[in-house]
Length: 277
View (spheres, rainbow, N blue to C red):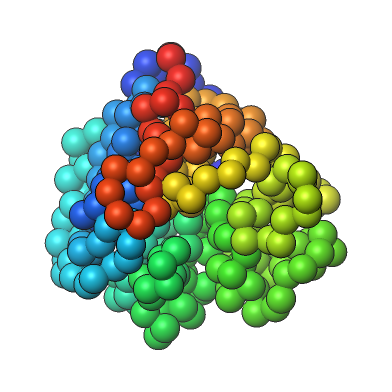
């Protein structure tokens, strides 16, 4: 993993979210920055797209010109000692290709959340950009964090069992991902069963990381929250597995105390999940 975490972790490490906005404040860059701040990091951002949305759905998308996306990234990297970054909604192939080139050389870990479709079913990644996500972003990902549908799309197979998880992970490694966390929220739950996220590292068996399932409809932005929390904990110098487990615990606390500020699905309660540093 590309990282400069062999040095002492800073008190407030700079973590960058490269993603789309959510005007409703519950997902996207807004969720990322709230999560990073709650966990004690300094949040910076690179906006790839703007969305008009709330908890009930997405009304529209406006992509940011590629040159200006890169200019934001340049400003952040020249102005701050970045300790980790994450990507979320990247919208189009030109944006993905440009960012993949720009992020090839770096000294910090990169978490790639391959956002394709919103929870309300609105496409957030153009269909003609799926190949760019697969061939350009996966090779620069230190950790890929797909949900079940995203992992199935990228790996080109159905995933219904632990054996399928392992096979899909192998396909994603072959595309360049250095690690994969297949999130368990879309798997069919068993009665009383904990949530299982599968952490897969090349050369090791995929490891089930369990955490309590929270009964709530306030699940808007959970994927953004988890991936940005992982990036933040990596910025603090935690090893990958510990960073993932710490992020799971943060998200679980935030979901357990969530509330709905508006219509539709509410987000996690970012501040209730905060951890003192």
